[in-house]
Image (tube, rainbow, N blue to C red):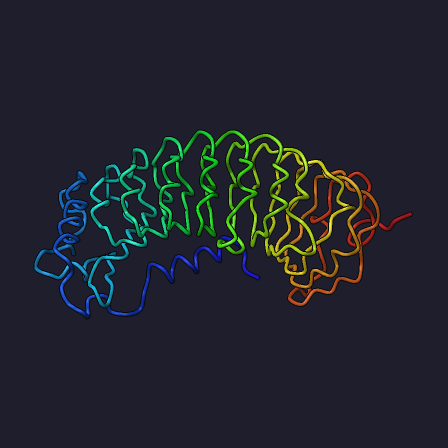
Length: 339
């Protein structure tokens, strides 16, 4: 199983780096050319995209992909771009056939997420990451009904998470990590649509607080990362033998629950519950997580003997003591023997 960040990187590469020629069917649509030109001219740089020369078909411009049949622009991928400065222009709304938009590693991109994005009816993959955009995550994103993949990580976004986001019918991945978000995780995050399959969720490195909603137990997440927040309560909602997660990271919060009552999914590849207030024993059943490659339960209140007889397929080295240190009374390999 692949960790969330690696999975997202693979999906992003496939979406935004197609290997087929985009402009084979003919010249790009004049409306799209005009929209791209307006996008370029909206920035303060004298010539931010030198390859966007009107002599050439705009389907061949840097970061642009067109549909092979219609020649309409379906993808715009600008990454990285250190010198591009300004706000996200409303002219993007004129790319009416756009499905994939990626603005990545553009440190001088500022301002807020514009409502004009809701006028792109076919938009499915939205990535605005590693920029300096600020302000709230807007509620109007829930109006982009075809949105399936939302990555707003590594920005300066603040405020609470809109509860309307998980109501999108096709949304299967949300990454809001590395921002300044506050407040609780909305109860609606336990009600992803069935069409979303096994959603991936990353809310790590924010300032979220409060107890997790019990509704999260309803979702078969493919991966979960809520680490480095101020969350509390019972995080056992993410676990269960019938769940599908390959990676769970709930570290560095204030979670408090009995680990003895937790069952683990066989698919688990990464488990980090460190730096919480989790108590009880480590269940023997965890040794059946055959794909497990990373484990950290340190800095909790666990007791009892560390299970033995691990059935690991892809890890030949034994667990290091750092995976278990600073608990109330854990003992056994690799720590001190139990009395």
